[in-house]
Length: 252
Image (cartoon, rainbow, N blue to C red):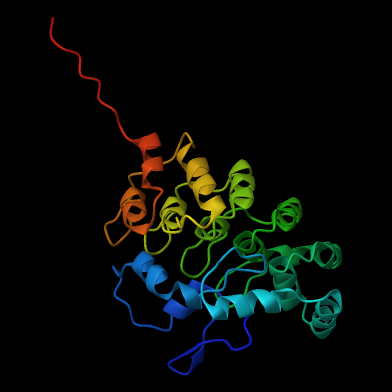
């Protein structure tokens, strides 16, 4: 992703939050969302990220504007490593490459990296709905779990990939799935409520409108998604959609 990947305790940090946290000795009840808020700049956002902020992030965006020639060079370099290639292709929206690999070996749709991220996870957090569709059509499970218990829906909600969120929900994604830390997709969407991200509100609205949503679920740190949204940004008012209203009828 970036020209230089960050290092912690001598380890290169992985693209995904899970691989970084696995290097660190956190107690079981540590607040994952606070860690996301304080160290989110270390977590890559996928090839079409809307993340804005530091100069480092701007440099990442520039690097992501690879020419077709460079993409083809990358594919050539990974031609003898089909697992790595399909994971990379799913993350970088290389739909034709995904189709070609799956035609050769349909079982690649179920592969994963060392952290448990499947091609569907990578396409989801990068916001590539067409790739997600191709993977599901080819037989990908909708709710595979990473080592930290993240589903593709968690990944899409963390980065406000509203089109992918909608697609996954339509194809049976577990709306109330909880990570190993107790985070639901709603928790993750609520933690990403910067007013600069136009899709943040749409993602929250979509989740909050779901009939079977369990908005009161608490993470292992004890927070509901509403409480996360209250301290994370300006969109807490959207949770009025799921608040219980009590009608007071005066005695007659």
